Length: 386
Image 1 (spheres, rainbow, N blue to C red):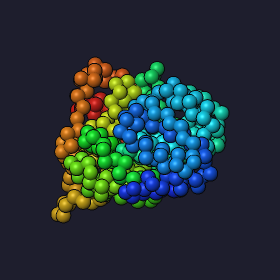
Image 2 (image 1 turned 60 degrees about the vertical axis):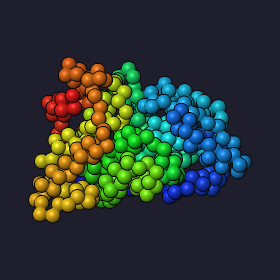
Image 3 (image 1 turned 180 degrees about the vertical axis):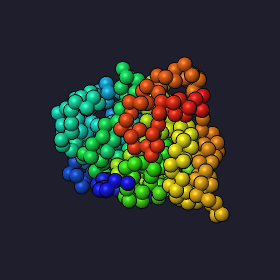
Image 4 (image 1 turned 90 degrees about the horizontal axis):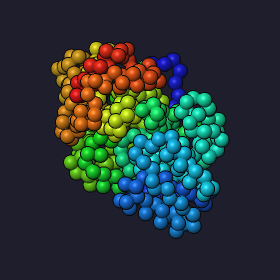
């Protein structure tokens, strides 16, 4: 644990079933009359944007919608959305969707006020000095926690890697967590994004940057997700389970803002960067094996996680409790049919050196892992997935 620590948090959180109705008051609190909504085609086609859009328009707010945010957007794609948003002279940006839409909304917000090139931010050649235009996030998945983090992930195709841009000035001004916005999530997305959220909380709890703030949010996130992920998967209309998952994902995001993820994410980025495996899915399939790798240095923390998960560890030694937690991770994946045929994606033993070389570059996250991860360790972990 670090000697000094701080809590970086969202300006305001509005939560609960039907809370999307309060979007008018939230927007009016910023005095915004010209709003840009950034979303993706999938969310747009479900009709989820229609209600908040109508509420705002009925309140006299001019609303412009950009609905073509791609999954895992590249630098060029984010720049195109920025160019579209710029012409609307927006006073507030609303991100509605999953991590890609919210990350893009946060980046566009900063680009509107900082006069820097996104390509320079990705390369570390420019810095963010000012907050962007106000942002309001409405997650429609319970996964990335992007609504709460100071991070945004961008695909850099020429390097076949995802890069994280991090700035305190990127944390959202307002977030609406309405479980009714997530009831239509397909089962496989519920599973993948839910495991992603759990991954965030677990990694932040064991991170070298963990502190009392991140621990508090991480353990509560683990508790909420562990008790509700299977219920949300089996019955998408279970609003209590959906609310638990949204809160858990958000708490996981707050943990990231205060601590950091570790080796799971470092090994995950190359899978998405070159082979376009969805971020949540790649994290989900890596999580149990990476935690198994960390077991010998994380026994006590894994026991804490087992308790937060509600597992019966009576009569167990610390080691046995820790092992029980890892077993539960494997069971979750099995119960929700989370799987990915890497060979079908073109990942074979022959390409593992490329994956490893890409993962080694993610030192920002590898340095947080409680145990040193060598190239040979990476090879063993990746090989288990083949």
